[in-house]
Length: 207
Image 1 (tube, rainbow, N blue to C red):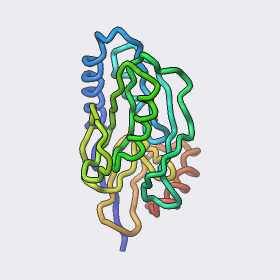
Image 2: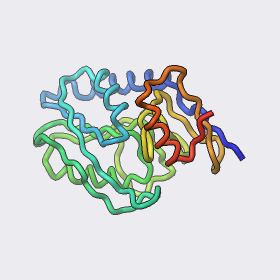
Image 3: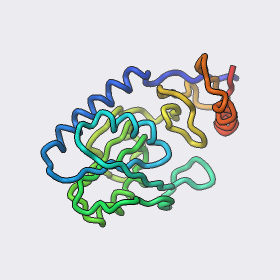
Image 4: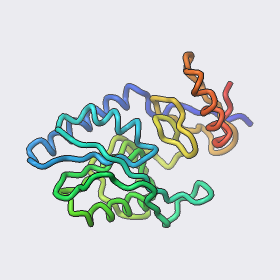
């Protein structure tokens, strides 16, 4: 049986919501008087982070961390490892952790715990997508783009193995099997190799 991927959140809705998140974040921090740092959790947040930075109208720095709680398969475990730490000191600064998607909350909770020990002035979390039904750890999330059901999603930098070149968020329309992805009409040749890797890992079928 052939299964398909359908758009869950179109590009226009993502852009509009990020603009609104930018306004909310700006309003919260505009009178803080302290330096601000946006901390992106790699790799999945890179597209969201780039777009969000443009909408936050408060002077801020950008830094990145890589934290992993994935074992040999796709199941999230409680074993969290920091693979890349921050380059700068966050003591006394307003820190906003930027995440692509939150499900169990295990990884994010650990990252928040680590950063809180470094004595920032404030610490908050912003995520594009949230799966509240998957939560195993109670972690506060101050800014949420979209709350979604427990479905496997790809696109907009959100991935398991390799990012798909997409500005929308997609979900698999059925629970198992092969899926079909409609690619853009114009695609840089360098992406074809990465798309092949993604399709191999995610069992996608390119028509």
